Length: 316
Ligand SMILES: Cc1cc2nc3c(=O)[nH]c(=O)nc-3n(C[C@H](O)[C@H](O)[C@H](O)COP(=O)(O)OP(=O)(O)OC[C@H]3O[C@@H](n4cnc5c(N)ncnc54)[C@H](O)[C@@H]3O)c2cc1C
Image 1: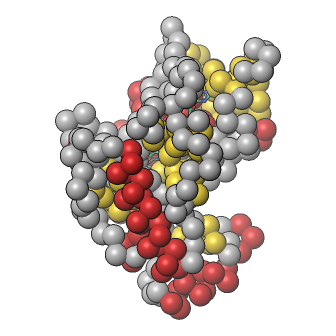
Image 2: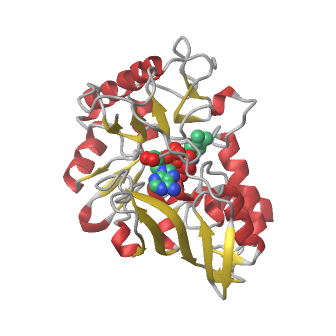
Image 3: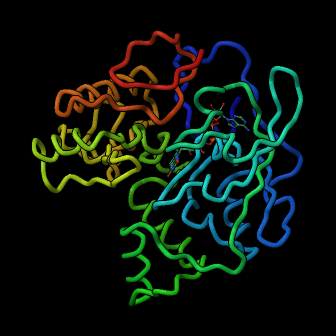
């Protein structure tokens, strides 16, 4: 199944079997009742997020600028600037591939995790996401949860706004920050031709966090998680392992603004070349930290036993 294709790395020989593009005659926001919105899965996520804000509904504004479909956004539980789509998902309507039945799954049953859901992991390919019902905040302002966005908004506003920011101001700030990191897809700009971040941020035990802080730097970025676990910055680790923003191979490069943006800068790279670069990066991070990175995009058209230096969701 393919939505917008923005989170797929296709093998050079192409996927085996039939690719099904998820499409619909209706797009965007299908229905609004108070703070609840029904959105179509085949529609473009970015356009839908703008449409929701245009209806005065807050909750999805920090997720603008992420390419792909609404269905893909649910599958990946897209996240940016301290928020994830799962925070506003009430339930998801799916079609079971096995028996063709449609059903609603409550958010809890979607098993959303960090850049993950049952549709991406345990039940990949088993359900077509058709629609999602979101619960947002009517007339809400945005209170930034993430320091980088808070600083950008305060500087654009000439001072912090403790009561929150208008959604349009948040959109402008998010798009500016993302653009500076080559994280807004542009057909004309090969430094955005990737799948966003190639690796997800590793979540490690408190013990590993302590060890790495001692071994690497006390300035290593880290965000506390549940049960004493700690999320690290994959981008920071990649740079610490010697692969800096702008690092270039023959046809592939790291984006100038983001060490996790593995891009087809030449416009001519093969998938084998992308994988070779990803392997070099992941091996260097493992040698430095003992951690094994997890790829964010889905590797499609590969044998399940594909030998790579990182963990990945692989399908034929
Ligand atoms: C420049 C750039 C920036 C990005 N920034 C971010 C970011 O900030 N945060 C983030 O989380 N991601 C980011 N991404 C990754 C990507 O945009 C998201 O994962 C997006 O949600 C993928 O949607 P898609 O429709 O393109 O999915 P696809 O790539 O088409 O598919 C991804 C997976 O979802 C499945 N799928 C797609 N649609 C459906 C459906 N309707 N039902 C069932 N399964 C389906 C596919 O089979 C596949 O397994 C970025 C990507 C790029 C290129």
